[in-house]
Length: 184
Image 1 (cartoon, rainbow, N blue to C red):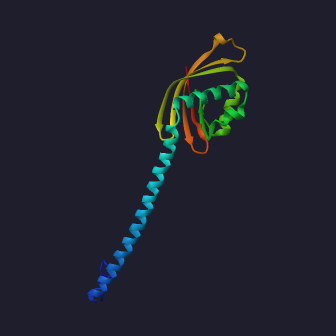
Image 2: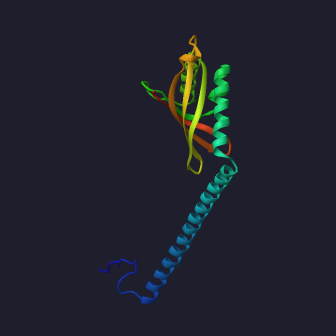
């Protein structure tokens, strides 16, 4: 009984047919491999071009100035009670984290937390103490916040630290991805 060898050629049959089968297999494997290589190369070129586009857009910006401008807009929106404007500064999947509570995940939960915060706060002053680019489209801002509770005197301001992870997209610009308030 004739068996098949590992290369698919029948044992004992003509060598010419076997070589022809192997050559055809090698050629189709080479063509398939070339197609994969081209697809892989296109993917790499797209990824590099996308990163370059975002990085070049960020290079044109003074990141500290961006953070300062966004911080002033955040303060103004909170002070004016503009919850829609305030919430629009957050990504759809943003987190707002405060001590002693589980994270508020998603824009609707963040909105709810900010509404409560706004109702209990008469003023807030943010001071950025650090800005660090931590990726092609992320900035980590660190700072302090002085808040005055409704009905309290400005001399009774409380101070906390915070970290904000800003995320840049070509469609939305800079938005808050993670807003973390650190106790005291």
